[in-house]
Length: 283
Image: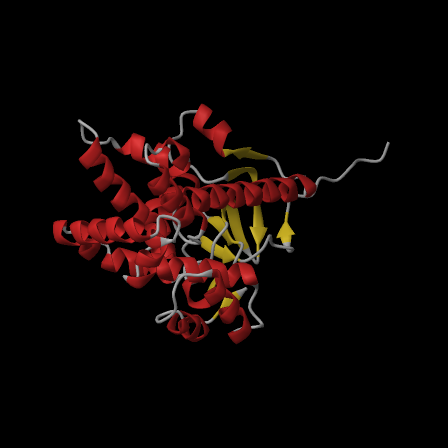
């Protein structure tokens, strides 16, 4: 799904005042019925992550942390089964999983002799049954399963979706009888920063020579695309030549402006690939 900048901005504007819940996503789908659920979810998640980055600091002052912790203690003191942490996160407009991390760290600082390591915190968030307090474990679990943009559950889903689309791209390349090297093969050869697939024989797409293909199971907005250009795509271009990026959930049309410089954008696997033809001699 390729959107103009104006179409994208209209969707993004609708997300300014809505909480990051599945109910909000359903309303967004009703508002933009022509857009796919996957595209809207990707935009929804990216816009919320931008918001969290902008407001992250204010939730991590010592005053804010202590205020949240005392409110948590007061809440579970009245009713330990109520979704105290989840409601607190929604009230202060912060991601439930990130609120759970704040409270868990504060709890462990108070109850453990040594400050908790990041690996211990991450392990407890992945498996709340490790938390040495049943009430807090339940509160953290509620935050994790109700967070549609952050947390270990979302990370697992994103990783699985990303892998699924890489497998899809691999199958399409094999279907077209295109020879390639994948990321693992390239790293075995000593390359550190590599695209998902290097074509052993370049192809032409819409008149442009392509040496490599990168799969992105997300929507290409300005923020993410410019970051990818800086951190990945131009590095691939410098090392391997021109290439193709597939944003499976679409992208902003105006971002496809580097074709002549050697980076094409697509929202699906191209159908007009031109490959080298091998003629067969008559016996």
